[in-house]
Image 1: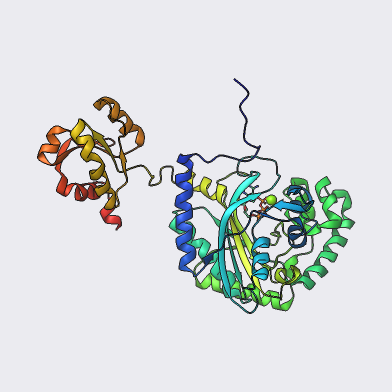
Image 2 (image 1 turned 180 degrees about the vertical axis):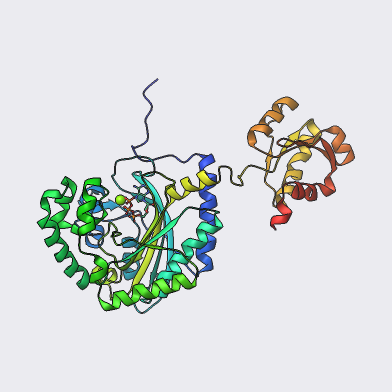
Length: 426
Ligand code: ATP
Ligand code: MG
């Protein structure tokens, strides 16, 4: 036997058991996003490399060391998208749907970053991204946050904390950055290796450092909040008011700076202490300058991205067995006659919205019941000569304590709906 080929490091298969939980998150998210008037957009996974260097910023971790870039057969540099915002803005400019328009969009799909794989951090990971264009007021920022709140609630999730900050306008940020660089340069001796590397290129990221030895320098650094321009300060205060009026709790984190260059004003992150080191489940903010930076006519914009692996991981912790996609019933067939009439019976049950797994290929009763068990079905429906004659099925409860009963086929749908709780859901 030759050696089996393995998947690329940091890129995972999602097996059917896991996919059921993903689908629950995806359908719930879709319903929530539609409830706010957001429409889905589907974008290529490959883009020109320049799109990301120009938007995310040359000095960021992503562009410096995480991109999957290569030359295609024509010698053009292409990159597997590390995030979705740049492509969405590119598509908006290219298709002319941003200028003087309000657009509320969302997308979902794989993103690629060459990071060190660990729990909650992969090289292919998945995001649900949301972007809104054409609105500069803070009620939009609040709407984005409320959408997250509704999604967490719909999924029954607890333990997510909202952290908020403002990065100000590009001008106030540049002034702050210069002041911060002077302060950090004066404390050069106290900086760790990573921070020294960032000092020239991306000093604000130093505020984000988790290094214990760095905390004292960071605490003494000039505060970004004190350097906000008036417009940004007003925007931030009004966002806070909206959140208070909507009953959303948040924590202002002056050290929240985010890894991408394009943010202005509001930045936020949803974090949890239940996933270990990879604690950020969702991150976003405002990026009013990006459309123009990418060659479009200026348009304000804001959005966020949810890390699916981390969200699904949190869901798995808090709801170990969500309503599964297992069939409600498994149809067991005994004898030629039953095998002939079994398929139409299964179709009738499916017409009523039930999930039915059908025993293909015959077999002994014992073998069929074993398959029924493995399918995860709640009930086995047994159809033999006697049942065919009486127009009944024998129902065996595969999971609970119910005794085996004979149910007339005319009332079988009602019976199954009631026992599986489906009627209550409708
Ligand atoms: P982190 O600080 O964890 O590296 P980030 O700031 O790089 O996150 P964003 O670019 O803002 O992350 O992406 C939004 C979300 O996507 C993150 O909050 C996280 O949930 C998820 N995410 C980012 N990178 C990865 C990855 N390599 N694997 C899994 N999820 C990721
Ligand atoms: Mg990162």
